[in-house]
Length: 143
Image (cartoon, rainbow, N blue to C red):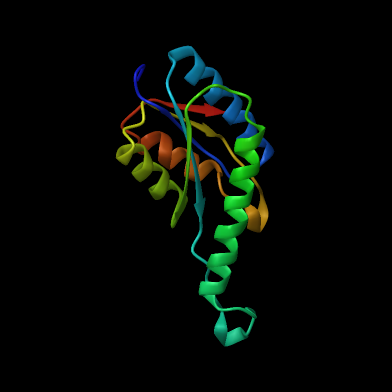
């Protein structure tokens, strides 16, 4: 853990920002890098109800561009000499976070206990619980 980077999932919420502060503190303590991950849920179109005015592909592209802009903004606000990497994934949040932790050989995951609510939710208790129980590395859950 002390030689491998810290993975910090984010949904750009205030709670995730709070968890990021802990991730930065831990990365500074162990002199390791930080890897931020944001997961975009796959858009689901209800063509039968004609709710979407754009194709699922256009919606996914728009979501990706928005996430990239938010990630860029977040990275520009970080005041740290840490090595920071960022990645945007698509799919089920808990699965993608666990996959990213394994692929990047994360030494620790620092995750918010919950994030946004309603339709904008991303890091909620179930995602955090699945990550905490499924991770092969230590997990710090931040309230």
